[in-house]
Amino acid sequence: MSSVVIIGGGPGGYESALVAAQLGAEVTVVDTDGIGGSAVITDCVPSKTLIATAEVMTEYAAAGELGILSDPPTVDLHKVNERVKSLALAQSADIARRLERDGVRVVRGRGRLDGPGTVVAELADGGSETLAADAVLIATGAAPRTLPTAVPDGERILTWEQVYDLTEVPTELVVVGSGVTGAEFASAYLALGIPVTLVSSRDRVLPGEDAEAAQVLEDVLTRRGMNVLPQSRMESVTRAGDVVTVRLTDGREVQGSHCVLALGSVPNTADLGLEEAGVVTGDGGFIKVDRVSRTSARGVYSAGDCTGVLMLASVAAMQGRIAMWHFLGDSVQPLDLKQVSSNVFTSPEIATVGWSQKAIDAGEMQAETVMLPLSGNARAKMQGVRDGFVKVFCRPGTGIIVGGVVVGPRASELIHPLSLAVAESLTADQLSHAFTVYPSMSGSVAEAARRLHRF
Ligand SMILES: Cc1cc2nc3c(=O)[nH]c(=O)nc-3n(C[C@H](O)[C@H](O)[C@H](O)COP(=O)(O)OP(=O)(O)OC[C@H]3O[C@@H](n4cnc5c(N)ncnc54)[C@H](O)[C@@H]3O)c2cc1C
Image (cartoon, rainbow, N blue to C red; front, side):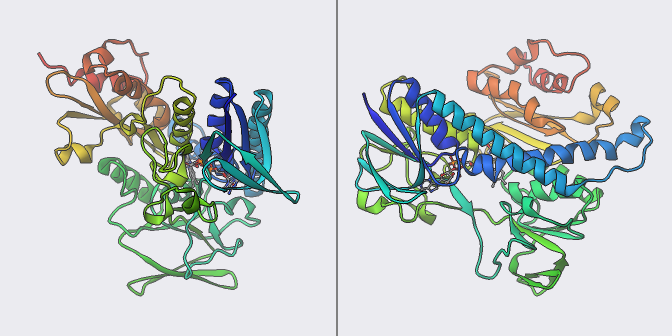
C-alpha cells in the first residue's frame, strides 16, 4: 500500500486526501489551523456567508420599484459575524468527519519536510512525529500580505481574516486594494449600509478582470454611493484613537473609522525544509510545479495557493486531485487553466471562463465575440435588473466556444452552460439549440450563442 503525507488541510490538501484514500493509499494530513484551511475558516466560506447577507440587503434596496414598501432594514453586524464564524467551524467539522469516515488520519501540528520522503510534524499538543511517505503533497496555502507601513492591529486596521471579530459597526470603512478580495468586501459592506471608500492603485477596479465587466461594477458601486479612488497608491495606514488614516503616495489622505487591507497574499512556504529537500521555489517564494503538480523533487507534489498558479479553492482542489491521480497511477489530464470558471462575488457578480477578451484583443486567440446586455432580457426587466451582460467568444469557422463572461445577479450560476461548452468544445449552435426556460436569465446565454451563428 502506498503512503501519502499531505501538509496542509485546505482544499488543496483535503480534496487530494479523499482521492488518495479512494485509490487505496494510506493517507495522513498534517494541519495546523483546522481542516478546511483558510478557504473554509477565514477566506471563501466566511466571505461568501457575509455576502449572502449583503445580497439580501441589495435586493431590499431595490424592492421599492417592485412595489414593496417597508422601512429600510438594518443589519445586526454582531449576529452576522457570529453566523459567519459558526458556519465556517461547522463546515470545517463536516470535512474533518468526511476524512475520518474515509480512513484519512489527521495530525494536528506543523509539518515540514525532512528530505523528500519524510515529514516531521511538530504536534499541537507537544512533541513531534516523523512520518515516512512514498509521496508528499505540500498544500500549505497563503496568508494576507501586509506592509511594515500598514500593520494590522486587529481592531481598526484589519486583514480580511480579522473582519469577523469586529465588535462595532464601522462608521466609515476604507478598503485598500481593488482586486477581487478588496472589491468583494467593499461591495458587501456598502450593501450592509456602511459608507465605503475603495482605494485602488490602478485606473479602475478589478484590473485583472474583463474591462467592460469591471466598468459595469465600478459604475454600479459609484451609483450606490461608494467613493472609488482610482490611481491611488497606499503609502501607509496609521491609527490615532478611533480614526484610521490612509496616506497615499501622492500626499493625499483618506480617513475612516476602520480599514480593511486587501493587498494580496504571500505563500506559506518558509521553514518547510523545501530547499534541503530539493524543492525549487520561484518569485515571491511560490513552489514551482508542472501541470500534474510535480515539484522539482522526486515524490514531492504541491497544490494550491502555495504554488501561486491560480489562487482559487477550485484550482487548489483540482491540482491536489491531479497530483494523487498521477502518483497513484490513475488516468489523469494535466491542469488546463483555460477551463477554469471563476466568479467575483460583488453586486453584480462577474463570472468568467476560458479565454479572456484581453487575450483575444491581443491576438493570442482568434475568436468572434458577442455581447448582450441583460437589460433586454424579459426576466431581468421583471426583476428590475438593468446592470449586466453576457459575452460569448467562439472560434471563427468552427464556432467552438472558447470563453465567456457573465455580469449580473447570480452570474456564478449562469456561467455553467458556458463552462460546459468550453470543457466539451461545444459550438455556439449546439449551445443555442438547447432549450432554456422562458423567461430566464439563461435565455440571454442561449441568445448570445444564437447571434454567433454563421451560414
Ligand atoms: C477573502 C477571500 C475570499 C476567497 N473566496 C474564494 C471563493 O469564493 N472561491 C474560490 O475558489 N476561492 C476563493 N478564495 C481563494 C481560496 O481561499 C484559496 O485559493 C484557497 O484557500 C487555497 O487553498 P489551499 O488548500 O491552497 O490553502 P488554504 O486554504 O490556505 O489551506 C492551507 C492550510 O495549510 C495549513 N498550513 C500552513 N502551513 C502548514 C504547515 N507547515 N503544516 C501544517 N499545516 C500548514 C494552513 O493553516 C491552512 O489550514 C478566496 C480568498 C480570499 C482571501
